[in-house]
Every structure is written in structure tokens, then in C-alpha cells.
Image 1 (cartoon, rainbow, N blue to C red):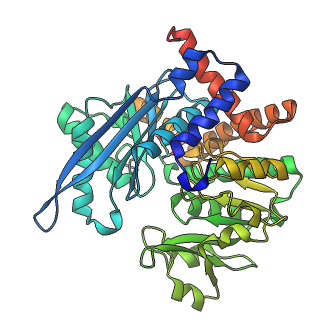
Image 2 (cartoon, rainbow, N blue to C red; image 1 turned 90 degrees about the vertical axis):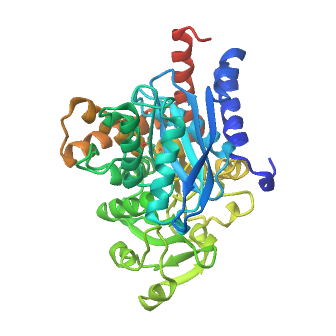
Image 3 (cartoon, rainbow, N blue to C red; image 1 turned 90 degrees about the horizontal axis):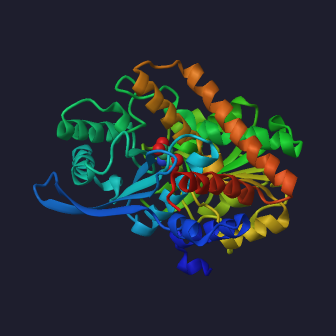
Length: 428
Ligand code: GLU
């Protein structure tokens, strides 16, 4: 695939096709799983602060619900496309399957840039999104959650609109809600912590000491921030982190080779994860180009921004010191770069395993909402660690047993489970 014509959905289909070949899936199962079950694309008219009306484009894709209701986040991004949402919905199906939770895969999005929208305008988009799709989602159909540039506040506006339409209380219709209004303790930390639970296990398999490990992170949003926190708690050294600079419309990397302090960085970070360059320099950070996070002397790389980041063009810049890549983002590595990593023998924890902590905690949130009994943070994180560790173990064991790449092993386990549930339901 040419890197220039990168299309996340084509990449997701290619990954699926390779797995279908390995598993010897029949044609009907392939046809069913390589495209989404249902797709919605709609207009969301919003009254802006200046009195004008702006029409935004919204999407929801339900890839597969044979193992349970569809599940997946809603992204707000200016470059969102139906194809990206399709890819992400498919990856959600594999993600829920690899951690063995009773949910399918879905994803949503809105083409918009929250950097340029007031709180009130964002509320308008959230409520409008729900009004367009409120009869096609719900606690037993499809359950949204936060994702890139959406938060608990967005989820609560959506829940509120849904409850107005359906005249009742339905806390299980959406997850990632704020604590106190149906949210789970630990949900904010879950994705980032989950990434590091898998890093901890992978380092054990590689015979590396986390206390002697350095890591470089791409992105400084929710996933990356909590991943860095737990990595430091385990004794690791974060040496570099990159983030998007809204003003310059490019990204920068911030480096301190003897390790940086996340709290110090957070003090100079805006609510979208943008780090102030001048203030960082005065605190002793080297400010480097956006790609520099990839070229660091470190044992671990954690891409935790967007898809299509480690490509055929930059993958060879990865230093020989790098032994492990744990993909906090969805689809950060293109197939061309992936082949290179495979050849070089760099150990990877693939995206839909590494970042499954968020949706696993969302599942716990649903369970707590159904029981109307909320767990302590310690219980949530303990159960999350158990789920993530056993999912990692199953994938790593299969990879070792069959001498296959970690991504291939994760795909084989996930797709097999979904294909089987379609089969025993009598769909194929
Ligand atoms: N947006 C997160 C993901 O991509 C979480 C989804 C969820 O909690 O449903 O995994």
C-alpha cells in the first residue's frame, strides 16, 4: 500500500484478510466481517454563539454485535472520515474480543475542531448527534464512549439528551461518564494504565527490568498522560513526549534525557494536551521536531496519538535500543512499517490489545450501572489489571507457541472468537 494513499479502513481490511487466510475462514464469514453490519452518516445543525447555524457531519458505524452490543468511542476531529470510523469500529470488535468482554464493535465521529468551538457549541453537537441516532443506539444496542477530543462532559450531555427522548434513566447507554453520574472510578486512568500493564508483562517476557527502562511517548492526551504516570510509578524513566501545537499546526517533541516530571509538564499544558514551548524550554526541555519522539535512545516506544504515525518513511529511524513498542493509539503503524518491525524482531503489543483498558473499564462501568452499585477505585484497577494481563498472556503464549508475530496472534484469537459467535448464532 502506498503510504500516500493511506486509508485506515483498507488497512483494517487487509489485516482482517490476512487473519482470515490464516484461520481458513469461509467466504460468508469473510464477507460478513470485512465490512460493517450498519453505518449511519447524518447532518447535525447547531446554532452557533454568533447566531448563525452551522451544519456538522456525524457518523456511527456498527461493525459487529454477535458477542454483545456494539461498543466504542466518538471522536471529534477536523479530519474525521467515514472510512476512519469504519476502521476504528472494526478494531473495536477485535478489541472487545481480545479481552473477552461481551461486547461488539462500533465507533462514532463528528467532523469538527473543538479547539474552535465554545462549550455551548460542543454541547449543541453532542445533543444533535444523539437526536439523529437515538433509536439506533442504546444500552442493549450500541454504547458510545469518549475518544479523541471528547470527554465525560460530552458523554453526560449525550446521556441527558437520550434520556429526554426516551423518557427515563438509562445510565448504561453510554460510558466514560463523570463519577457521581453513573461513571466509574478509574475510567480516566484506564486506557493509559492498561497500556503500561501490558508493557510490564512484555518487559518480563523480554527479560528487561522496568526500573532500567526508558520510554518515549507520542501524544500528550489522556492515554499518554496516565501511561506516563504508571510507568513512572513502576520505576521507569520517560525521556520524551510529543504533542500537537495548535498555533503552529504541527507537532513538537519535548525531551529530557534523564527523565521528565509529568506534573511539571501538565502545569504548562492546555486542555487539549498542547505543551507550551517557551515555558518548556525555560524548564530545561529540549524542544525537537514532531517526529523526534520516534528517534530516541529508549527501550520502549508508546505511540499514543492517532493512526498512521509509524510509516514506511520514518520506521527506519527507530534506534537499535528500542526493544518494545506498545501501541496506545489505534492503528498507529502502517502495514509497511509493521513488516519492517517484524523483520527487525522488535516486540510489539498491538493496538487493540495494548489500549483495551479503556473499553474494559467501560464494560465495568456498565456492570456497575446495571447493579447500581459502584466499586472502589482499587477494585476497578485490580479487575482491569487482571483482565489486561490475562489477555496479554493468551496472545503472548500463542505467539510463542506458533512462533508468530504478536499482532498476528492477537488477530487470530479475536477474529476466531467473533467468527465463532457468528457461526453459533446461525448467521453464517
Ligand atoms: N475510545 C476508547 C477505545 O478506542 C474506549 C471505547 C469505549 O470505552 O467504549 O477503545
